[in-house]
Length: 190
Length: 190
Image 1 (cartoon, rainbow over the protein chains, first blue to last red):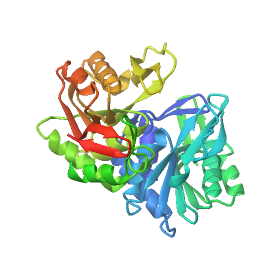
Image 2 (image 1 turned 180 degrees about the vertical axis):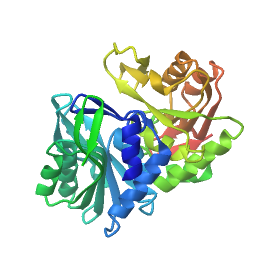
Image 3 (image 1 turned 180 degrees about the horizontal axis):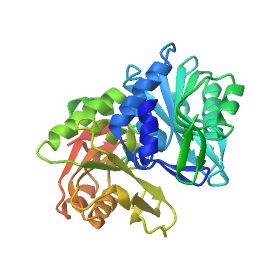
């Protein structure tokens, strides 16, 4: 997606070879016009698919998924919540996710009422790196007996394993910008 | 706002006299059509005001603020982040907030780059109860030398002190639904 890549080059900041700061438009301050273009592009990438619901994860995924829903006939958006503690509540689906950034495990939960058997669920998130969060969300959708129609990612770190981990589960991944490598202050797209 | 009140009566769940669960449309699963009507209503309530930026707080405020921005000429949305630890980063504005729900203090931070002197900032959040979060956000806007044009709230618990705390600071509050009282399973609006 050309507009997104231009925005990343203009306003993203590569910190070393692994950290990309996009907090001026994607995950602290949000550029709502850009999010609309991103939503349209997700619709185009998944135009063959029937989508009943969009699933994302707090916090950065929420704005992206909410705007995107408008291009998918306003389907409901559900955001998974992160929690440090195991949830004894039987009314939630739960999946453990490892965060490499914070070097700890956390749990991701979704209320059982918000995912139903047979529903077609599109997963949307801001970043794909090692794929832990996306795999956790896929796991939750499967627990509900629902179908994952695909994973839509805004920015993929193409030099990490996330795509492989998702494709192993036979799930389609669409990333709007794939970064091949980064050096201090420089970003190269695939 | 009639549509919102109808939705609260239909799908909200009063748990005792203080807890209102609206997770099927406002803060776990999101009804994006409803959020659009909410965004329009915020625009109407603040139509006299010049708004340069919308400030909210993770996680539940993000979807509401993102959709609302579309009715405010797509102004940028900034969401404050919650953190347990004091932040030694000099690049953030910070405010301490007490959570009565969790009975603990947490810190709310916003990157200094995302609030500028003289900017007109509309604060949006899902709930107003004791007002701690809103007062924390107002505090942050003032640290930046920016102006708070008002606080827009989806659901106000009118039986708590939040409105008074905000109005003490000479800030206008607009709530789209004000709950006068609750009993187990019953909700009364003002």
